[in-house]
Length: 354
Image 1: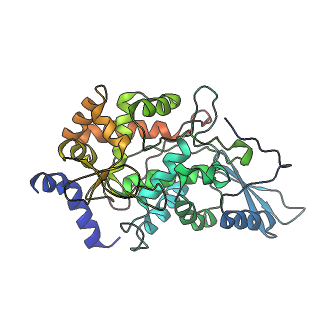
Image 2: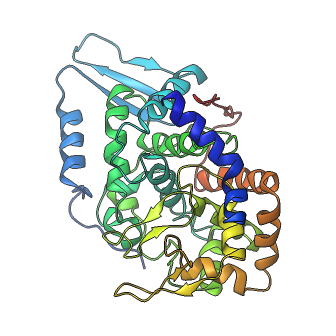
Image 3: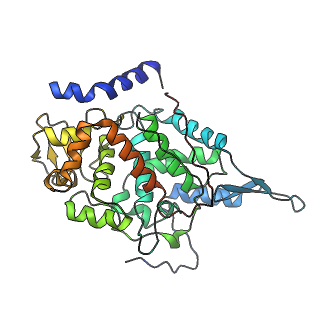
């Protein structure tokens, strides 16, 4: 990140708000066949399987390197915190490598990848969650809620190639942690230990939120994961980042004026702006008076619901409170469905822009 851009984004974090104020599971019986969500992911997997020189089997944070020698014992590699920091740094160094992608950062889409990989968890059946990285396969990778996330998965392939010992599951969550912190959000503790699963572990469609629905739907989705009203509202603050795309969700536009900096602006804008339904040929969404910002029906529902609105108001007034609660709930979200080994270390990564 250039010094000028870093300075500008730091300024955005502290001034954006003030500036605005003033102006059923599917069966898989194909004889063990893998269903890849994209041809690229299929080719990458085949390449790794057929490599004549070396491969890596990564399970629960421990990698076993298989060497092409009948007399050579497999090499056990147990990554340390320093190894995970290197992965973090690699991701961070590439977040803004393509200025033409969205608002100049892959951060928002990486956070969305981690979010959607985790948000499939069902506390009653114990299925889904961030353990598995099953979005690599169809049909899960093709679910409507995951539209556009191939950009994030493809972005991380070179990182996976450089650090083959890390599982996709751990990599995707680490990327989400990196995105939050590099976009000047709160510190997010990270624990490795996720394993990669096959297509048979894919979750059925419909486990992620539908942006066109209201608060009852949100409760049905998030209560299934184990979250309450306050936690639903806290997680919604991630909509301060990124934007919607007509070729993905069908919706269009950013939520805030600083879509690559995490602040509590989502809440203050939701409360203070006068929103009206946009007149266009797309799905129903709300628009501000400048026609530059948007809110989804599921966003607007937060201030229509009597139990949720007070939390919107609290977070709009107190960015520190939002950061505290967001860090707590997103850490839990990222660990849904994971059975960590006892005493697995919680790691704190140093941001590259600190």
